[in-house]
Length: 118
Image (cartoon, rainbow, N blue to C red; front, side, top):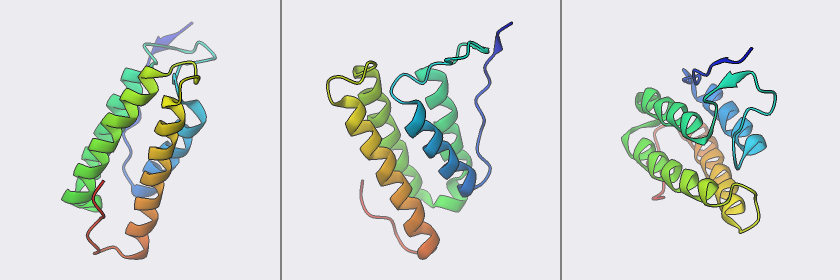
């Protein structure tokens, strides 16, 4: 029996990096292929993703957090425009995931560095 979907809100940068990997695998539609959850869709996934970014604001820094929120909004629009993965939006959305992963690697390498503009 399906149950309500509650998105997981990341508590650490490592969990956030794991969430990016999960998103890479489940893009572009983020549907619940097993039918375990009600309301598991692109909107609920990105709601949890954005809440995770906000939750990690102190660890990410204001500029990096703002850049990631902008990237998240672009990524959601791209995936929503290409739910079947045929018009290039999904490919562009996955590229944004890679850019976010790179931002996190740079954050770990130089924790006090100002992030590049998105």
